[in-house]
Image (cartoon, rainbow, N blue to C red; front, top):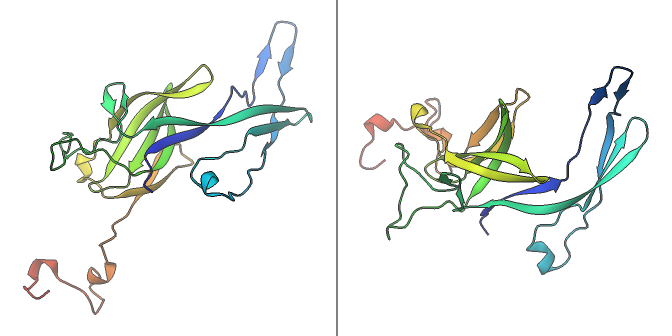
Length: 211
């Protein structure tokens, strides 16, 4: 079954560390020592295997040995094809940013969202989402917290024309530098045909009708 949703586990208003001061005193809040999640049992029924199940509680232990518990729940952030701000998430586009349409004239909406990276730039946060499709597509969605819930407020495709586009964007991660790192796939590409030292090498500029 193909994936069609962007989702998250919501954590309600956790203050990880910080301090406050006044003219008479300086009060340091405790630092986090450990995070632990309540266990999630393995699925044993078909019904359990068809739904998203997450830990229902996060326990934060601080360095002064105090603890605090936070309820967790599964939330759908967006569904492919949703209108978010001025864009439609998952809408496949060409090199000019124009919508790609199917044979019947309908818009081509991806059903393969994959890797995500939550990136902080300036005073805003963005979710970079890979579409595991041909041609390659990435979406850039601004998110913010409202009433203790992460919400998507605007989305648009990433312009990849300067690099000639991408293909089948799969896994991704946020780097230690705060940037996005993504990987491509090409199921039909076989490197043994591109390696000049391989006995299977093919010169693509001089292929015969039999190649």
